[in-house]
Image 1 (tube, helix red, strand yellow):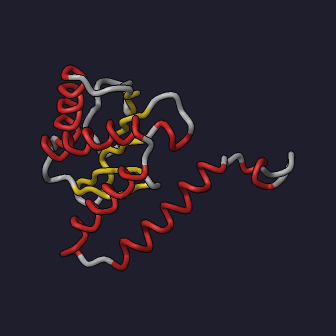
Image 2 (cartoon, one colour):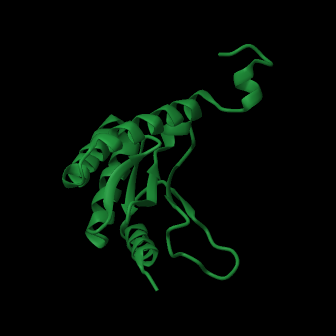
Length: 152
């Protein structure tokens, strides 16, 4: 832990945030070395490897969420994003799963980027707390992902 008043504390990044930034830098380097032909397969392998590293509770959610997302939006491209499973549309991250353990939170989250078409007036949620995937929650996830990929 850095000493109080050190540069790390002044910048305000936690150890988990710095680790996520390092993961993102590795992802960008790896993506630049991949061919378009292997990008989807490599991205899927990366996502499944990240999911396998998760603690049990997060892993169960991530595995089911991965299947749900690809079931209702097979055109999305799995990839990692800041070390999290993510799903891209036309090269841009559309949604992602943040494990509770990643930032020592009390719940996991399903998040959507500004690429998602979830607009609803002047204020709408883009991140959802996720503690379990029962049939009602799965239906809501399907609805959100389907809405998110809809293009005008």
